[in-house]
Length: 221
Ligand SMILES: [Zn+2]
Image (cartoon, rainbow, N blue to C red; front, side, top):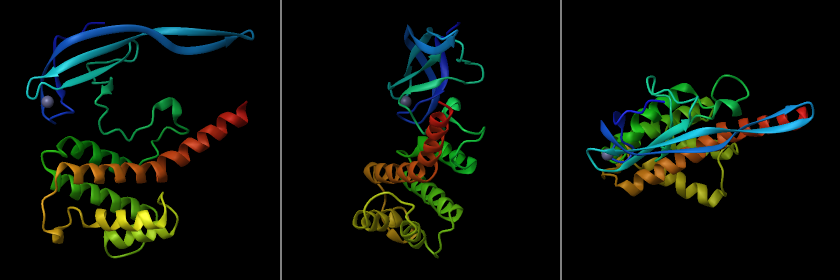
């Protein structure tokens, strides 16, 4: 595998898409697959590449890589190992159908805005609020404001947590970054919104799909 000494990459620390310098390339032979032939189990290892690139803007590290046969630099097909980044997609081998459980439009908005969460927290908050609203609508939640819709989602039992916790979080999230809140968001507000959003996505889309997948595995045993 040919590895480039420099690469244009989005930095997951500062958010810039910039030239990055390869500072370390480590290869490990780790477990890749297991086959059963004639009642005998056989494990297979495969080379896993860890490529550390240093951002020329902020000097943060971005570690990318993957199994040798799965990395395709030309089409930017590699795993983000650190920082993990805006990941709402489930690995293909965990999927039941060919489609991701999270609606495409939400994945798209989230992947676009996530890098900018520290630079433009207010814009990030607006997009996250938009995504939350889409999730509410997708699940038939009623109300005129995001707050009301989230409350309706809670009443339908579609949000995790106790009633008391949820009432507080919904009030906070509903106000963060809304036009009438009248204040600028800081990085901790952004973190709160991001965590809440990912929790909702997990609870509504990801976990039910994973449970179905587990059941499918159990019934095929
Ligand atoms: Zn950077």
